Amino acid sequence: MSERFKPIPIYVRIARTYAKWAPSLLLLAVVVFVPVGLVHAITVHADIGSLDLEGGLEIFAVVAALAALTVTGLFGEVFYTGAVAIFLTHPRDGRPPSLAQIAGMVDYRRLIAIDLVYGLLVAIGLVLLVVPGVAAFVWLGLAAPVVEIEHRGVRAGFARSVRLVRGRFWIVLMVLVPIEIVGDAITGLAIGLAHDLLGESLVSAWLADVLSNIAFTPFYAVAAVLLTVGLIGEKDGGGAELHSEPPR
Image (cartoon, rainbow, N blue to C red; front, side, top):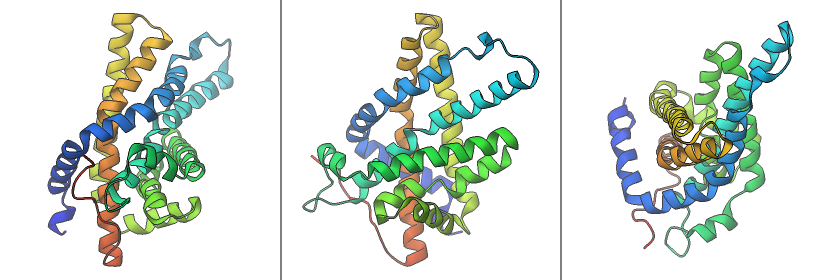
């Protein structure tokens, strides 16, 4: 395994990139996660136990709720990662694009489709057997940055993600999965703390979800983009490159 694809050097690059680009990454996170956090909070706040169901219907409701939590948890995270891919790799007049320029460059239709399909596939895999969900999370996890970096369609983006991950599955897993687990844990703790302090209201769940995503999701996005750019370079011998400096 080359030095650039060992977990520790990758995490060091993630931390350095996040620190360098933090103000813009956080501002972009606010724009994305304030509305998306409401969707996730509504799902978390739903009281499945209040439904008058029995037997198989109750089991189905619980499974459906778990799937919905997974989909809405990933929704926005994938879209944000695609936007970060534009921000870190696409030049405008030789400089990183501004947030306003990113808004005009994002392929909304494709990223939203990637977001929904990816979240659904991971959710189904996790609910059924866990391992297929983790595999889908890893194999398809680079589709969003691929779509924006290489201007591919939805199916082509997923196929390209699989090709990039092939031969590097374990390193992608060791980078993305721990970040996702820690991020989900922080979100859960933040929502629980918000409920304790502010009561079990939709507003408290929304606030906790937004703040935890703003604080942590940029790490996931930076990691996915760095892996994508590095694997494109390894597979193709060249390709997209990261900007050396953030916008001033």
